[in-house]
Image 1 (cartoon, rainbow, N blue to C red):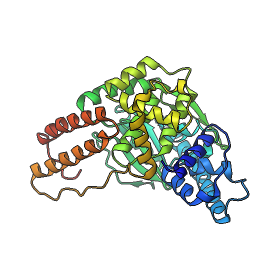
Image 2: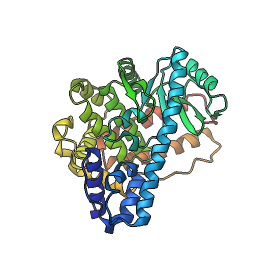
Image 3: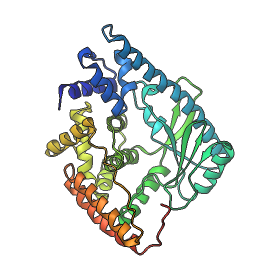
Image 4: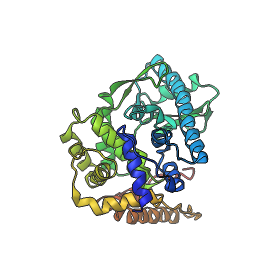
Length: 370
């Protein structure tokens, strides 16, 4: 890891725990780039803006990013209030995922960026919830069909994306899907209230039960690791949640769920990063072990260097159904090979899932439009 990356992590760590640390002017360009890539600019910049020797251009860029984040919060807060009230009026019990619920964990919630609104409603309430959103936002852009095998329905109201979730995370392995469905049902039924203000009119929402939320945050970030590329901010979320709810987390339940979904090794990679890079107290990093240190450091290095973004593979142009499915399977196996350098245990599970999912899809009705 280069000096700039180490300095960057020092800055993030200080911002997470409400401390201060100097901004090394000589590293400004690289630090600005890292904060942009990792989604942490508006967390870090308020802490250093009073430092006199920061170049004027960099200072203006930092202020602009912070202002943009605060303005986005106002817009998102307003849209969330409209959506939440509409669902309550329709008799739909929703649970707010990610976004504002995680921002509340930070010393300065208005500086934790979030770009859309994710509302879990479950399978039974899915269609009434979608109808309520269309009625509430009649001019919204609608480009997703309200199909029962989709993870969520999406619309864009006044520039804000609202996702109505049937399920919080999709799984390809049928056993994972069944196990997670039970975890999700319990975690959402035991959702806890949260009042969000951000210097605006307060909204009282519900967020996932903390133990399940920790599992969900890991799954969400790991899904990005395997597909689009994750960022450091997602790991910050997990560190702060573990700290905030350390007294109420159900440790045995979390251990059971991680093992059931083949995620314990992945969790321990994240815990090593939370402790050694982000400053989470070691006794709050559940199931921490130094045995994963070399792989966790490798994961962190690749995350900071931008290498965790999976190369985009060209879609198969084959007209033959079998050829298309073989192409998809090969690409998924390549992804498992990539993940193996970080978590061999999970890569094995990915390969088993790919074979099983491929066999099931081979005998299923072909869906050219997906």
